[in-house]
Image (tube, rainbow, N blue to C red; front, side, top):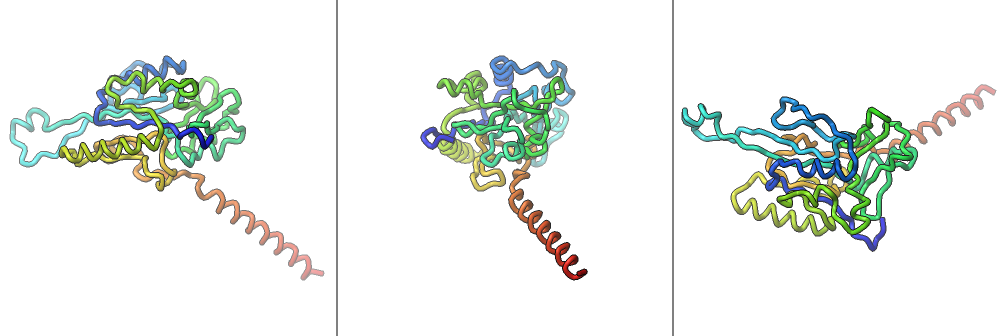
Length: 267
């Protein structure tokens, strides 16, 4: 990463997401991502369920029943106190990216903006990156077996433009910019919401000390991460690779020494 170029990223404020799916459409149109099915799944208004090789932005619709003290018969008859949580999910562009660690061809690389991009023309379809992602983001396309995911519109930001999804978002739920500035803005937004009585407001993925070193795309949530299908404590699977290889090397040396000792004793 170029030290003169600030790390760029996304801050997604789910408190102002209206579920319009403009981000999904803009992402597909700009990046020529194939359509992923136009039939409702039966799970609310969600027709994509999650991120995949053909869904780089996914808008979740989560219906919740809010806790109600002493609900009366009328409230119960009307279905209780319901609320919708809407959130646009995307690749997290992790600081410590497991997909980068395991890619054998260099197809995955970190850009000068600190984002993680797949070069599909040199992807060999091995699939090692798929289980290496703690968020289940990266996926292989059935048609060609190669890995695909959000590039944070590398071609657009290289030309001074903002990513297509952020450009299309009508409420500024998706915000793009230098990551340090976004983190400051997000902290102020959480304080504002909590001061207004929205005690559930919290940030997810902004902490540089977490299991992935902080995300390049982080979120303001209005419920526990699990409600949105996000892992509560993500950890990059490859974090212990160095220790594992040292242990393997030590075991190999021990085995070699044992064999040499055996031959020496046998003489």
